[in-house]
Each structure stands twice: as C-alpha cells, then as structure tokens.
Length: 259
Image (cartoon, rainbow, N blue to C red; front, side):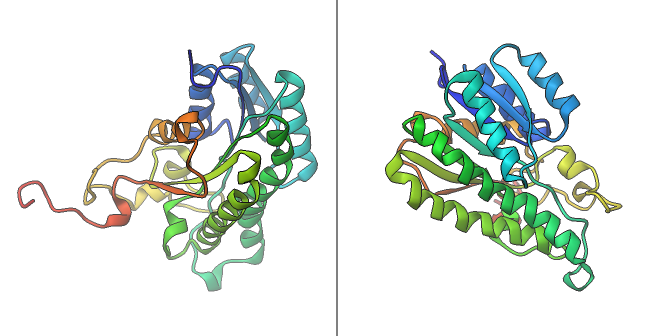
C-alpha cells in the first residue's frame, strides 16, 4: 500500500523544478494530485502525463478567489483535500535595500507571503472537512539569516516562519499539522536562471565546494523530506522547521585531509 492512497494533494507552483518533482512523487505514492500554477500549458501537460489521478488548475496565489476555485476543483474531482504544499515562490533581482523599488518589494511579498497566507486561509476549512491533514510551507535558508541584496525575499521567508507557527497553533486541534521546509541551493531554474529583472543567476556566484556536502541540492532531496512531513510517519510533528541545505548554514567544513 502506498503512503498517500486515497488522499488528495494540492501543490502550488506545481510546474516548477521543485513543484513538478513533488507532484510526480505524490502521484507515484498513490495520491490524487492537483497541480496549481499560472502556467496553463506546462500544468496541463504535466497533468496529462500523470494521468487520471491528476488535475491542473490555474492558480494565482495572490488572488483569494483563485484559491477558492482551486480548492473547490480538488474537492469536486476527488472528494476531499488532505494535503496542501505552499511551494509557489519568486526571487527578487539582487539589489541593496536603498535601490529596491516598492513594486518589487510588494510583488515578492504578495507571492511568497500573502500567497502562503491565502493558501492556509482557504484550504483550512477543506482540510477540516477531511477530518485533518497537513500543510507544508516551502521557505528557504534565507529565512533563517540575512542575505545582502535579497531583502524582499529574505523578509518574505522570515515571515512565513511566523505564519507557519501561528497556523500550527490555530489548526492543531483540528488534526491539521503545519510545518516549514527550508531548502538551501537546489538545482532548479529558480537558482540556475536569473530572476526577472536580473542579469545573473544565484548559481553564477555560488559554489557548494566549501560545505559539508559539496554539491547542489536536487529537487528530489526536498521531495523526500516533504513526503515524510505530510505522511502519517510525521503525525507528532507540527510547527517545526526543517533545514535541507547540505550544511550551508553551518559554514565551511574541514577538508577531508584535515578532518
């Protein structure tokens, strides 16, 4: 028996590097998967690839009515919603705070923070109707420290941490668990291609060589942690933060010959 048989999972940002990995893995574990994204072509193609237990719904995470339609689509297609993965997110072009325009600030906060807030707000009643479930918010190691030139993104991910803990307290007695995952540098277009308005990608000036696990993370690394946190194996875990960064936040590691 698969871990997610007869369960329905909504993944936002479901066509991206991490999102599509999550959608495929949940589907392989028996779940009905609802792929939420603004990219209709890629979302429809992924749903078609996965087959009858998958649906695409166009979802603008900054729009509460779009969220309501997505949750309704999940319940209409599969009868219930059991898991929400708030994965959608965007990065700002690097700039010091004094050179960051308010429109950029607002866009990053709208998608990364308000989008997560609306997801919890709209999905919570559906999860309650399903007699419980799990929400995982994908944050970032940038939400655990400061990073120069990325103030909007850093602020959004710090705020997601507080939002997650508050939601865990509010929803725990409804048997709804809420946790965060904080990925480090993961090999996806998010890292390997410049953000909108930028000329360089994060991977252009980042090397994992000094760190304890000297490689970029893979989407599947994050996916495996996500599957655990949303499964019954994690039934006693809520309001918690899981860092998956290969040791990036620890700092440079001793080289093998001197360890």
